[in-house]
Image (cartoon, rainbow, N blue to C red; front, side, top):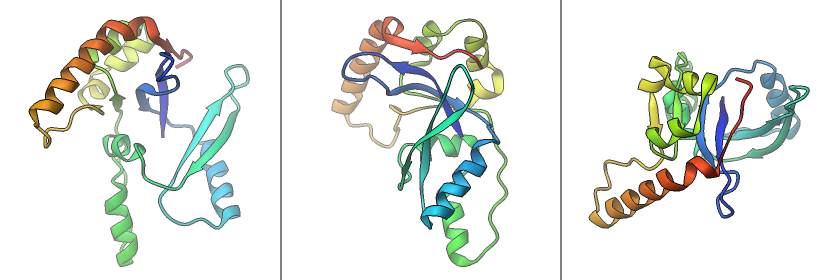
Length: 172
């Protein structure tokens, strides 16, 4: 599970995550199981939920039948979907999951830190979570100079624009 702490509010980017972090809401599991069993679905998926800020009641928005970007932060959280799928395919026992705190960002750490304060900032900077921070823009395998220059320009722009164009969700 992951929850969005910061979202981009720029017109073309509204709703995109700037910071996802680990979450554990046991009340979501029965909802997911009931939905999957009702649909008879088997395979890769992720659910999107929204939680009512006043009642803390979760609402299921959609089922995405793909790995999508959840694959990357799931790895940070200690779940390797591909490994589990291969074990399942081979009839082997599922590997134990040892969940780890994580941050998954799409801006620089410094830009995210400028956008957070108080409890949210402390949560982001918790040593075990901070050490396990992944960035959607980092991809060491692709060192193409043009990509490197574009990502550097993108990060500079994010650092200048985002603190004023992000919305922090409170209520950790």
